[in-house]
Length: 193
Image (cartoon, rainbow, N blue to C red; front, side, top):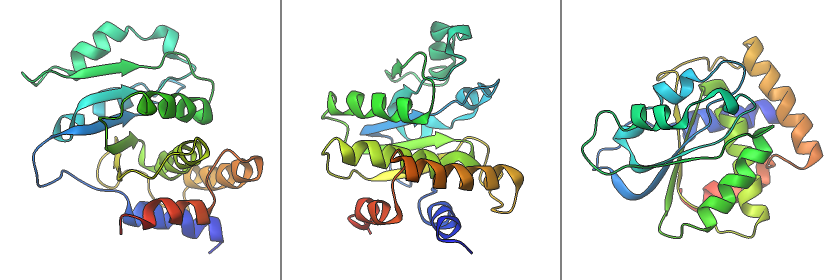
């Protein structure tokens, strides 16, 4: 197993969580990475209502087709509690999403915990890209939980074609400096173990 594959598996094995035992936390932001290419279903499957009253939706290349008012109403559908929903709008790639997210969170010091949600196969690269952006901006680590939009297991087979493509992207983007290294990942999550 390569070092990157080991990192990928470690993230899926240790950071992916399920519904917390305690109540919804007001200091938590639920962040959805909806994905492009017709993957807007991620917006509708993210189980945010178990976790937070603040939802932050990262942008995609497909965002011009979304009706943000409709998406916000759908996300708020099952709760009488006030829910804050923010949308990025257009974003060309994961780094643009996480750079924007970093700025949003820096402007929201009341947010102390994060939950990232996207398709399970994409969670490791999504988390590593966020960690890189967050640390590069000089921020201290925050508790981070990953929740797949595609169910408990989803597509998490590290030998699947999709996972293989993600592994290749992690290597490519680590070399480019856009994705956290194993050392940066450990520095981020080690604080909360």
